[in-house]
Length: 227
Image (cartoon, rainbow, N blue to C red; front, side, top):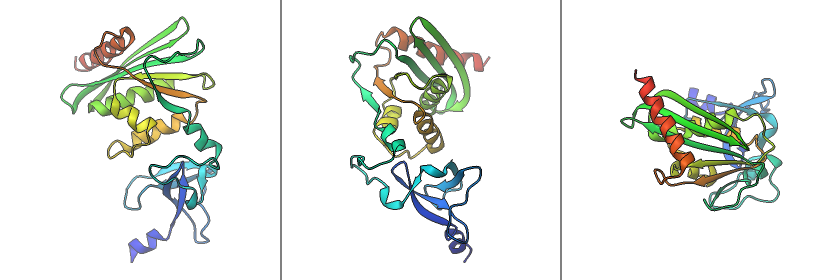
């Protein structure tokens, strides 16, 4: 009986093209807290997310799997179309921001670190950070997240270079994460803040100078974290 009662506190809605459960009150109206509503992707999951009220759409606007996004989707969903994977040989605009990211794990899972190289014109910034115990996939995703959070402008084209097919697939091809769901959700939220983001898949240890720098920063972070 208790489970059935709890199920009645949630309503099927659409969020960024995905079907979700949104919290409602006794009048079947969305419960808002400072303009945000609690949602779940599955009623059985323990964790919940807070999203903006205006981001929630009727259930019928959810996009079926393996189907192109409708032209009638909201502006929020349209911004997702600008997140794509590009060929490594693509010509990049002069005013773009480049983010080279890499993650490393000693043991997988084990002590993990991230390396990030940000380039904008003549400006460069390096980040080497120990993130504790984790997997290679967690480290790769975390590097992307931290790199995006470092940016102060969201109006310029952003190009993220990564050798992680896992990360790029999750963030450009709409793969549904089986693990690291919270981390993936947080990155997708960050991506929505930018006008244009593209991912470029690079080969690891292939002599690409900037990618080698990111790799060095990631592995160095593990060594420093274990000292």
